[in-house]
Length: 489
Image (cartoon, rainbow, N blue to C red):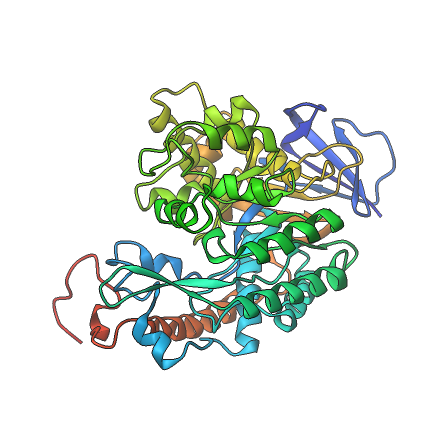
């Protein structure tokens, strides 16, 4: 069936850049776009006129929130050594365990995927926290996640997370590392089996990736096996890297290389590498290694930085210059990584923070951030059929409504959205030609019931976070309120 979508603005692609079409049209049949422009002359079976709206390429989230987010509990809530974000020595002694049942593990993805779609994201590389797991993710639960993506219609790159170790809090409030190499290698074996079994599932909607947890919690053998599998299967590897001074110094101490230097040594620093967050490179004022060796490594590698500005600015940290990376030719994509899973909000935050860091309003533009959320993500995945509205591209299309009063008078669709919009202004979403959201409603999802279950599971997360603290930590200090309560419970 051939469908024509029309709106007051369409963001097309001219082969090099996004372009505006006034009163534009997008025509697709099956999972492919056939036409972008105005005044299509061919036969269509269905026409949808969205009126005052902008039709955009679907957004690509390279570090997509796959959780009922526990990371928000780290915001203004005391030291990670005391608030339960890290495992304490006491918790390790008692024995770590999963906070959720297997069914609840899959539900968290249902909740997350629904909200990703709701916010205009059509391609997602999910990320979840390992802190409330017994160790890492498992093949069986991810089989359920693939089925869920097929049910909801979200395009995903999936692979169970695996790791050789975890960082924990010692009694003296310093960081230690707990290692279990056999468990890490077994996790990699499951991830490899998962890739072979599910890459291309659900008509290509599900693709595989390798997702070792964090560079500082992986051993040389684990990453060497990952590098070999990635090279053989031409598979993307998403690895959190250069995201803290602690990570940088730990890798330098344990491996004798900076994080990027170690990836280069292992053969992992290449065009298949997707690296959240790329902030702490050699030469950063917070690390001991001086000079620009890491910058030169990154530039030569073709790797992608998954930029997640919102989650870092909450802690007063930021990429030193989005514009510097972009102008040099380093590929930049965007990720949410926290609640809300709103890439539009991350574009806005990324724009403002870049201008503060760069000291000017010209080096980084709205176009740069929007392109990162679309073309940059597509390049990271080696997909020239994603992130653009053009003939032959996948019919991954989202529609942002421009009629809400909070947007103000419309003078430029993207400027209005950057200045005042939010992800939930997304009115409709088509992924591989399937309408997965219409009139702000995701499929047949009962949002009230979805939220009620999420609330119940979040209560379990809170209980588990209290368990992870030291034995003498008072439960009433788990969540530090913005203001003191007038009456104690």
